Image (cartoon, rainbow, N blue to C red; front, side, top):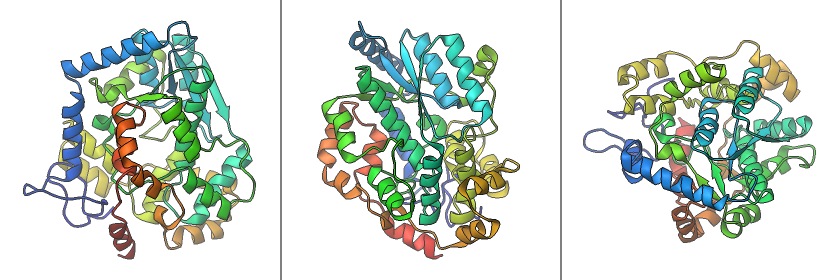
Length: 392
């Protein structure tokens, strides 16, 4: 990666990050956003732990006489694996939910099996038809947009909502930590059901039959009418990804898969090759900046790793992706060299979310939508900066 203009004096975000601003000390607005969230949720402090314990009691009360009292999405990765352990350790009765996009690594699959067996947690898996999944992925390739992983992220969310409704569960627990992972910059990696549907309609070749699409209607049904709450415990409690990984390895024989988001082959391709090569985007700056803010590494170490060390690319991964996508070497290279496009060049629900900002504020305050959704989806994005970035 190349340094683009000013770099935050506290983390390693630079001027290529959408909607970035720097104060008089050179500190970016994303660092301030993390500080504000930590203050709001009292992250890792007694007040935060107490608030989370209160939520735990609410979950238990709501879940009385039900088979399960919460839903937890799992992938075999660090955060979701620890989240499952944490829930059981705190006396909750979770149902684990997995959306299988048919690109799992063997390590991730084994990790899930080990945890589920030892914790005695039931698993609900939705497996999408592999040809259908590949057709959706191929359509995103052909659309020349960055959000290659969007279909999986949204499908998991929709699957968890459906399972929660099926078992009359009121709470979904998510293993996201803004302390450990940072915050995806506003305007990057945007996706919604309309976006996925419109790209697939234009570039796909087969109908969506097994893919769980989250339409706007479904989103409103789950949040506004079914009142299914989303809780992120790691926003309240003290959490270290490194300590969690060590604990999981010791207690469950869990195995590390080599890097953030590398437990799935498509996610690995997305982070290690697709975004850095086609869009000059390396999402390691999120986790590296988070590590600097948390004191896990120095800023100089993070800069060295981000700007001077390429992302890890699994051997033979490119050939695997080409084969599954049905691309020849020539076609694949042609697509990778084409002019990038961005999410705002295709139909989305974004304007609708912005118009309904007051409603989503109320839903956010009631934990019916995450605060990150409200901040990212309900305010205008700096699309002009993205356009300028593309023209450079």
